[in-house]
Image 1 (cartoon, helix red, strand yellow):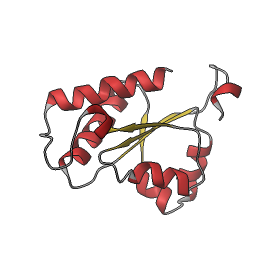
Image 2 (image 1 turned 180 degrees about the horizontal axis):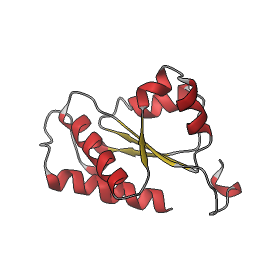
Image 3 (image 1 turned 30 degrees about the horizontal axis):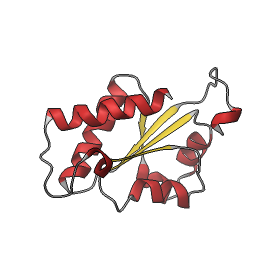
Image 4 (image 1 turned 120 degrees about the vertical axis):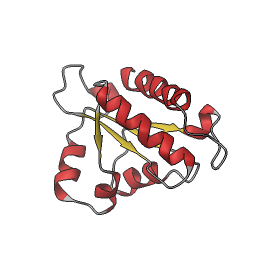
Length: 125
């Protein structure tokens, strides 16, 4: 799925894996992924399934045309899950890079919209 070697006509799904952790930034990441899915940017997919190496999830992820990983905090659990499952071609959105800090980022519509906008931009590239 190398970006340089793929064509825009790829039939694979566009997948979104998000942090859904217990902190505020995890909730923002989760809400943003759901909004991205509702708006048709991609399909929200199961991050835990990667960690569990669930065969159907692994196969669908292998066939993906694009993958977006949304991490709430700098622990980068989603990125690490993709890496450990053997995936290397994906976009990584770290909420800290947008100015969000764990335990001090209220979950608001404005916060979610900021992440949705950035995620949309990343999936269009």
